[in-house]
Length: 244
Image 1 (tube, rainbow, N blue to C red):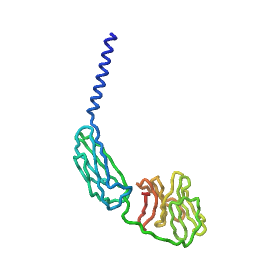
Image 2 (image 1 turned 45 degrees about the vertical axis):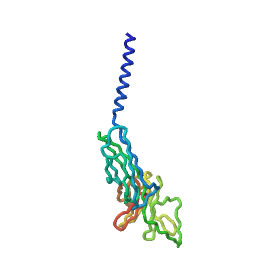
Image 3 (image 1 turned 120 degrees about the horizontal axis):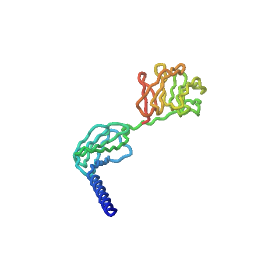
Image 4 (image 1 turned 45 degrees about the horizontal axis):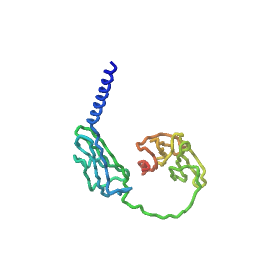
């Protein structure tokens, strides 16, 4: 009986192994695309043209469609595994991206993205300056926002556990009024608009509104940007930057 069972077990294991390998060989593999930008550069200049080379490899099956996107906009569709798109004008400053989606006839797909920086085509103008005066400043303050208003300096400071808002005598450096933020907030830029002070936080996606006269918190607001940095206004709207 033992001699009969042993060959049966061996044959059964071989069958399972063969069946498993056979299934793996029939499994549809995802296409793999590669994106190359020419010319290569650390930073690209706004308004310049680039070429993009897309090369896609298949392990099995057939390609149905390959789509190339620039900044989320479709700029090329092809059934060719390899193709080049020339004279693509870089029309956005900041973080840019090319994105490829390759789809096979059996609807198995894969995607690939490359990101790069686009800088302004306007060269910054160089200025000189002359120091007219200097004023005392608390060296312990990690200054993030600063605004002069009606003879006083209003200052927003950062760092978790020590962020705050201050009204300071410009000539003496004396703190006239202050408000400390909760330890979980890292204070950022400030601006004064319509009798109120607005202050951003770093990564909490939250800002605060204070009464100018007593720093009482009268409101708060949220923003979509992952980080809050600088804050100003144009007399009507708040204008913020996110550090990019």
